[in-house]
Image (cartoon, rainbow, N blue to C red; front, side):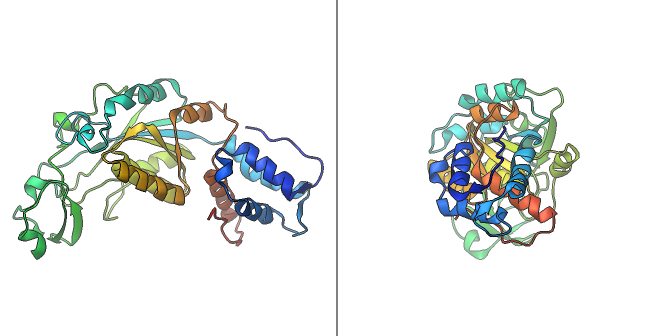
Length: 329
């Protein structure tokens, strides 16, 4: 991705046109947000970007864009979620994971990612999230939940072994079971890496980065850092649960992050819409596999506005600048 080199001062109206030409969905960006970006680089506050100021913008955004390394994370594409005890296709959204497979497999086999990572729910047989085991003697529900008739997908609170809020699910993805295996229809990359989560009997783990209670973390971040990964594309099952949680944590850890919507399937449309709004507010983006293909092949002409803001803030944070963080609100 390249930008025209200007040998003259850049005024605000010209800067707005530059941004609108390189950002997708540019009509949805308030011009005040672009003004803020302009003001951020206009260090002498004279209302124009001189050559030096525009070069700083160019280096902060475009030089970085052309150096970015990308990874793909396929979240929990396991038998139990595809056609087993917790099949996503049985949700209210009626989304069949098999419909996402052709595009997922194309990304795995044809796109030049620096890393490809597969995650798996990997639960003990008496896991805290299992509806069938919610009244086991090694755990204690709060009084209100003890006396009510519980059903799968109810939310409860445990007092023991420690206080935790938990959604109850049918038993799924039990360690070393057929249901925990990655679907045989998913292509496995020769150099792919695997992350197992939810292995602690008392702690659930939606995010591939660590436990829901923040008592620990997986090796995922270390794997990505060791590979100098900058951009994460996240897809898989279930859209509004583990895919969303992994995407949120990715953003919090400073990765440019995109949820690949046409390669992810969820349980409810309301849940999917809600997490989309949450992710956009965090500066994650919702993309499709066509954009991913163009991006990893460096054949793209449009870039997410949210990622531009992230690059600006990361760059100036590293340089010790104290300017207020730009936001799109």
